[in-house]
Image (cartoon, rainbow, N blue to C red; front, side, top):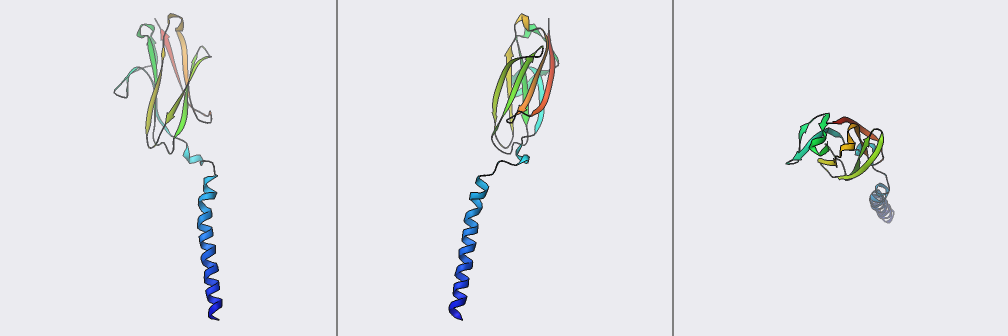
Length: 143
């Protein structure tokens, strides 16, 4: 009887070890969960960025400023990922900026240089790595 118990114990240890070794392999092949999406906590249009913060947020900007910026802040950021700032003027895509964001919290911005022909309605669409729309910011450029 004693040899039988030893065999059962060895078999049980083997099964336990094999099960523990299989867990990381199983998890490694899985896609990130839905909860891994970063949370957009702040999104504003502004005249400029100083010391990593937006300055003079607004929805109407003078062409004389020469530049306008889109500031986004994410908290929390569960894992390294990408977001996009898609700039549109009069419903025509002008530029797409891809930004990397990292845990645990991240802020970033993009800007466009303004020309006299850029007067009128604009929008910036903020999308995640899967191109899911997170927020749309609308603003205007005037004299």
